[in-house]
Image 1 (cartoon, rainbow, N blue to C red):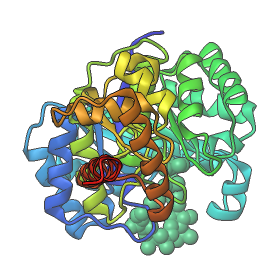
Image 2 (spheres, helix red, strand yellow):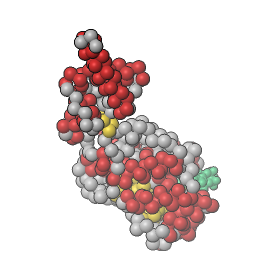
Image 3 (cartoon, rainbow, N blue to C red):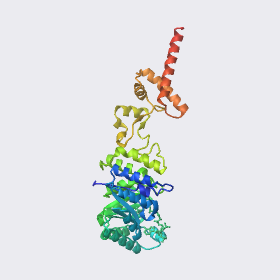
Image 4 (cartoon, protein in one colour):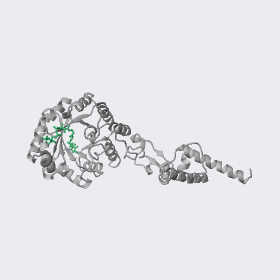
Amino acid sequence: MSNVYIVDTTLRDGEQTAGVVFANEEKVQIAKMLAELGVYQIEAGIPTMGGDEKEAIKKICKLNLGVSIMGWNRAVIKDIEESIDCGVDAVAISISTSDIHIKHKLKKDRDWVLKSMVVATKFAKKHNLYVSVNAEDASRSDMDFLIKFAKEAKEAGADRLRYCDTVGMMEPFSIYEHIRRIIDEVGIDVEMHTHNDFGLATANTLAGIKAGAKYAGVTVNGLGERAGNAALEEVVMALKYIYKNDLGIKTNLLKEVCEYVAKASGRVLPLSKTIVGHNVFAHESGIHTDGVLKDSKTYESFSPEEVGLQRQILIGKHSGRNAIVAKFKEYDIDLTPEQAEEILKRVRSLSVQLKRSLFDKELIYLYNEMREEKIKDVNLQNNI
Ligand SMILES: CC(=O)SCCNC(=O)CCNC(=O)[C@H](O)C(C)(C)COP(=O)(O)OP(=O)(O)OC[C@H]1O[C@@H](n2cnc3c(N)ncnc32)[C@H](O)[C@@H]1OP(=O)(O)O
Ligand SMILES: O=C(O)CCC(=O)C(=O)O
């Protein structure tokens, strides 16, 4: 697998999540964090919107973060002029390639699409910008037309083609075929931009990469239109651990970045959010905790510290003896096997009553309760 570059669009597609707005300072802070994380390119927003959006993009450009800053544009010269005015070094030039979009949204025809894209691309190249030509709704486009579009984009000077699965209608096997065909027939660099409508955004991005796409367009926490985009944290970690392709991203910062974006977007991270959820390294089941306590690799794909998290061993209804023994050891209490068995019974009963796992102080309470009962029993037996 060749090198893969992360293109983060949290500040563009991520902010397009219905109802999400980043304050300008938050946009700047997110850009700084993404640069620190080590992404290749930040799609910072849509300059032609003007106002705050343009101000924030200008500020991000002025920071000289050492990463490429891209502005998003329609295939419209005025849009690109606004991008240039912001000081970006790269532009995304977007236009729909599917007949559904061309006919019903743009109300134009295929020739108009090709012409608008070529004119916009040549204009951007004349201004020494890096150009990604974005085929919106590529996945629902006629493949022969998409190939023609990609060829003309390349001839006009485009540096890459963004393949957009705009409504998230693809699955990995077909997307692999599409991307292979584009690369084989056009020989252009491809960026994957996938949406999560069927929960396949990350899988589809990985399939595209496997087919030879060099760029992965992602968002932090998978923010984005409707069900969102492929999540940065998922793609980076899957590439590292499933495909053995370490992109050099500072993954130990992931938790912090994801938490920040969650807060700024007002979209709380679910406890079991992939990669960075608070509970994705929490173990309760007896067989799992026993395994993890012996060797964490038995039930973890990578160590929690790698993404800025910590392992948690919870004690609850599904716990086993070994976890109970280990937990009390943390408090310098060496349980006998019989004591561990007895406490486990009490843990199960209390967990069912409370419908949750137990806090450490509740465990100590159960331990004291058990000891007091034992003392009472002995006293009774001795008639004291
Ligand atoms: C799949 C995606 O994520 S695409 C990105 C979507 N993001 C956004 O829309 C967020 C920011 N958008 C905006 O601020 C505004 O929509 C703007 C500034 C881009 C345009 O605003 P307005 O001029 O008010 O137009 P409006 O949004 O109502 O309609 C879009 C127009 O752009 C046209 N258009 C849409 N996509 C493209 C394109 N890729 N290239 C050229 N024209 C396009 C539409 O046909 C429509 O034109 P019409 O007015 O002649 O019918
Ligand atoms: O990136 C683009 O230009 C297209 C917009 C988009 O987000 C998409 O098609 O999913």
